[in-house]
Image (cartoon, rainbow over all chains, first blue to last red; front, side, top):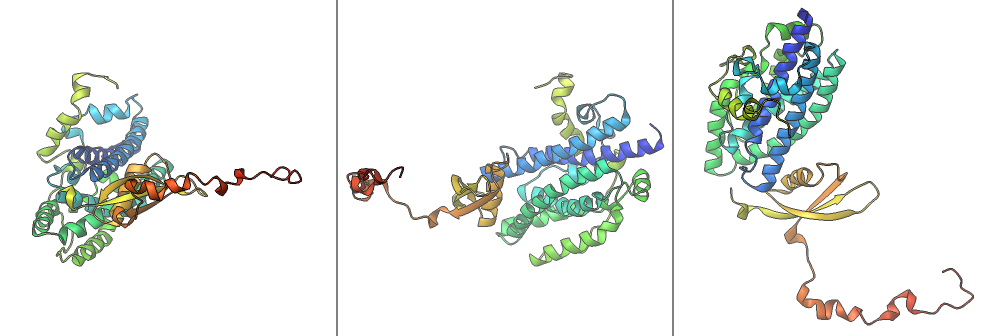
Amino acid sequence: MDQQQQNLYRFLVGLGDDSVVLSHRLSEWCSNAPYLEEDLALSNVALDYIGRARMFYQYAAEIEGKGRTEDDIAYLRDEREFTNLLIHELPINDFAFTMLRQFFVDVFYCNYLEELCKSSDERIAAIAAKAVKESRYHLKRSEPWIRQLAEGTDESRRRIENALAELENFLGELFEMPAWEVELAEQGIAVDRKALKANWDEYVQQFLKASDIDFAESRLLVQGGREGIHTEHLGHMLSDMQYVQRAYPGQQW
Amino acid sequence: MSQEHLAVYEVFVRSARGLDHKHVGSLHAESPEHALMYARDCYIRRSEGVSIWVVESKNITASQDNDTENFVEPMDDKPYRHATHYVLPDSVNNM
């Protein structure tokens, strides 16, 4: 791989990691959601993210050109080789936490993917065009939940406030870019994340304000995901996610 | 969260443009908006439809099984309500 291909590979794997890690977290609700209908709906969102991860990984594997597959990238890399942004890997916690994280990333992806549709790389633009429709639906789902939980009972309100206190640490990283992503953004292939921050802040602030929740702006407090520096949670998650492929290499079903 | 607090909705799906909405099942939801989203995820995720109606079940007035005797059966012995009961005159062909 030359420098340009390497940049592209790292960029695509990062987006794939964001998707596969969040997908796995959402899938942990399968059979555990508050009721059957929500169980199906959450699993459906998880499947959307798996589809997204596959498209990014497949393209990354082609660029790498070593004959690896999407499965190799997902199941045969260790924790430090995963470069997802940290917000995606946090444990599901309670339902309020899961939905508030979903709301935050849904607002982000609606903006981000819309911009990524304009990528000068046609393959990336096509992936974004497919994914942005899914994210718009995800946002349509997460918004009423946040409103309902924030304005519901004392307990649901308390849970949303706790979730916000924890998630606030990981919001700023959504708008950070490693050197290779900056280069790709300058070439019109990637999106300038920093440029999305003002809109995101305003949208989230207005939305939460309607439910009487004070939120000023996203601040950069913790980062490291794109460099492979993770919270203590990712390793445990991967040991679940990768177990079958590690124990029975090449196993298919 | 307990299901006891959730309302039941009936789901109707139109499988293609030009066809009627057909009853496909029911589900629990917090609100009509949620019911519509759950119906999307439960009933048309494999492209089974192009449009959905949801109606809270309590808003449906239904005939009762134990009324069958007076509600349905009186219709069974009135063949003259069917066109086939009447003999067509020869001059009316191919009706």
